[in-house]
Structure formats: structure tokens, C-alpha cells
Length: 323
Length: 224
Image (cartoon, rainbow over all chains, first blue to last red; front, side, top):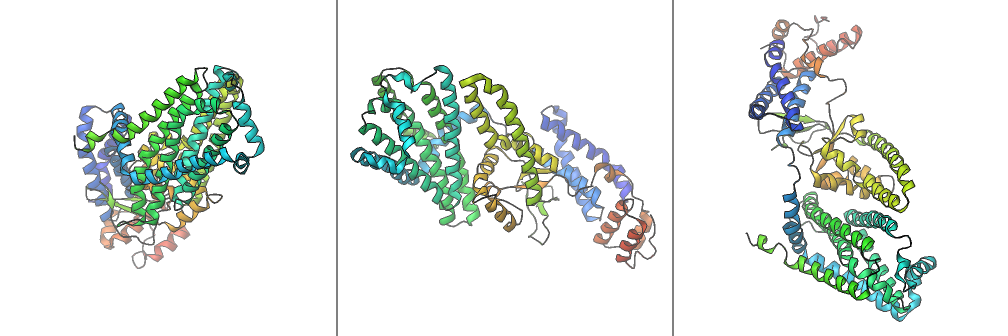
């Protein structure tokens, strides 16, 4: 069969495949077109094979190459996102992913919460240590924020600044979480460093404010949103650490494959961490600074911690047992 | 599903086998075109940032909160939306004729796109995308660190510049009977046909020169 005959005979099929692929990917294909599509794809694939084997020119071969590629992309298009997927993620995938890496969560958790508690105790007993952690003006800023028992100082301009703080917390904290994850690629060194530095900072601030007598303003403020925020930082660091660990100890896999497997779990953890940070920012902007009584806030803070711990320990277990 | 077909050669073409017993060829894009696309996207992001910030600055606290979130989204999530919803092409990549695909040639999903874009922060270290550049040069498919981990690559949408659909379907200035008579091998025939499609773009001297390389078959081939 000559080239010209080949083109004349089959070009209607190629054009039809291109048109149907476009319609399917736009979501407007009719049922007859959907039924027609696999046959068209197989036919054009055969034409591509014929064209390659019979020395057809680049133009024709490349054109058919693109037709087939486009058809394959449509055939294997990623399934769209649905609310069912979100529910499944929250109820099962996320808590199971956290428990799968219980060892890393535990180890990094001890490092993180340990450094918070150590610095808290250290700065509480030796207040001048705060200046090894933060510069003078930053410490003064903190003291100004929490000095007054008149809680309105935390919200100078009312509702408007809540949204401003919400925006700030989201952009700042999620950025930190993403960087903690990304720096895991360098053998986890950056991730560990960020984790320890954050823990040191939080502990030092807590210690300084409690030793300076501002604890009764500071702790009700942070207690509620600290749960999701600290857990989010911890989980981003676990995800980053998994990347580094995949490079250091890939087990039976090639390092590239170990990285890819670790990244799959890591993305689940990052989705969850981002959700927790969204929750923390919402609480921090709209609840923590509200003029509610401290007892109320301690209660909500305690409840949040217990809620999160229960969630991570118990959620999704029925599925894991093969429901 | 699509799998890699042949072992790596010196060529940068990626050959993927489909279940329909044919192969698809893709050309991964190198650092230069990707850098230009990234710079274009950077400019677009800058313009968007200015457009978003100007009205919001007048809204006080509410505006500044939304501005911060908008800047965050522009920095981390701008490429993700385009890669998943616009078939792998951000505006910059579209201008350069590039597309982000999975390493089996198919479109990326949310997780893969998020992964490769979050890890761009690692590619940037220690400065000026050095880690990403080194990774691209060492990989056989020009994968930067984010691509390696997410299993994606950036390919040219069209195999080479100048290959177009109307040309593909037009008849060649080459009598087929004469071609059959010559009994060339598959590669030679493809070379001759490709020369025929390009002959209108090249001068006659050049066509003669190229035909001579196909000697002896080209000796009497001075068809147009």
C-alpha cells in the first residue's frame, strides 16, 4: 500500500480519534462516542505501527504518534477528586499513614517535644538563655504582646486583623511545613535541623513568658491551636525524614524507587499536615485571641489535644483489619 | 499500561510500549527551555501578584490577610493547578511547547504534581537551582530532583519544531512506483521521504547534497 493510499484510506479514522479524544477530555462525549473510542484507538495504534515499519516520513509518523498519545492520555486520565475520596482520606488513609510510621513519629516526636520541654525548663530557671535563641527586639515584641492581662491587646483592631493574622499564619506555617518536607531530600539533615530549631524556639518562648509572669495570658492563647500546629510540624518533618531515610537506607530497593515509595506516604502525611495547619490557623486567628475566660480556653485546649491523640491512635483501625 | 520499551541509547528519545503493540516516542526537554518557561511563569506570577495586591491593599486587615494567602498560592500552587487541570501545561510551558507528564507518558495527578512542585524548594538549593540542574544533567530524561521523586518528566508536545498536521496528510512529491523500484531499507526509505517533505524548505543544492549521501539510490534522484 503506498503512502498516499494509506493516508486516504485511514485519515478519517485519525481525525475522528482526535475529535472524540477532545470531546471525552472536555466531558461532553456521547455514549456512542465512548463506545467508539477503544476501537478507534486500537485502529490508529495499528496505523502507527504500520507507518513506523514501512519507513513513512517523520511528519506522518509524528502525527500518528501524537494521536495515539492523546488517546492514551484520555483513556488513562486521572480520576477526578470527590468528596468520598476526602472522607476516606480523613477517616482512614491519614491516620493509617501516621501509624505506619509510628517509629519515625515516635522518635521525631521525642526529639521535638523533648526540645520544647527542655528549653522551657532551662529558660524558666535561667531567663537570660532566651537571648541565645531570639534577638532582643523580638523578645520585647513578645513581651508587649502578652504583657497586658487585658486580652484586647491581642486584637488591636478587631475582626479585620483576625483575617490578616489568619492569612499570615497560613502562608507562614504551610511554607515552613513544605520546606521541612523538601529539605528531607538532603539526607534528612535539614528536616532534623528545622525540627530542633522550632522546638527550641517554642520551648524558650514558653519558658521566658512563664518566668516573666505572663503565663496566664500566653498559655490560654496558645493551648488550643498548639495541638494541630505542633502535630503538623511533626508530621511534615516525619515526611521529610522518610525521604532522607530512603536515601540512607533504601532496603531492597534502588534508591530512586525507595524515594518514590517514601514520597507516596510522605504526600499523604503532607496533605494531613496542611489540613492541620489550616485548622490551627483558623483557631489561632478566630478563637485563641477572643476574650473568652482562660478556664474555657484551657478546657478547649485540653479537649483538642485529647481529640487529636485519640484520632491518631484509634481512627481507621476497622479498615486496617480488612473491613 | 504504558511501559518503557527499549534500553537507553545515546538518543534522548523515550520509547514507550503500549498494550496495543505499538510504541510512542517522546522527547524530554532540557534545562534551557525549561528555564525559559520558568522565567515566563515567574513574570506572569509577578503580574498576577500586582493585579491581586492593588485592590486588596485598600481593604486594610481583611485585604492583607487575603493578599498573604494569594501570594502563598501563587508561589506554591500556581503550577499545580495548571499541571493537573490544563493537561500539564502552565502558561510558560505552553509558550515553549512543553508538557509535564508522568514517566509513562500519561498526565499527572494531584499528588504527583504537588510533590514535584513542593520539592522545587530542594532543587533551588544551594542557590540558583544548582541541585536541580545537576540532577537534570545526570538523569537520562532531564529529571530534576522533584521529577525524580514524583516520577514525572517534561517533554516537548510536538516531536520537533516544524512538524505539523497539514503537512502529514499532504501527498509527498515522490512517485511511489519509483520508490518501490529502488528497494530501499526501512531507514533509507524513511530518510528519503523525510527529505521529500522538507525539499520545499531547502535549496536545490542542499537537496542534491543530501541525496548524494543516500548514494547509489540518489544518483538519478533529482525529483523535486
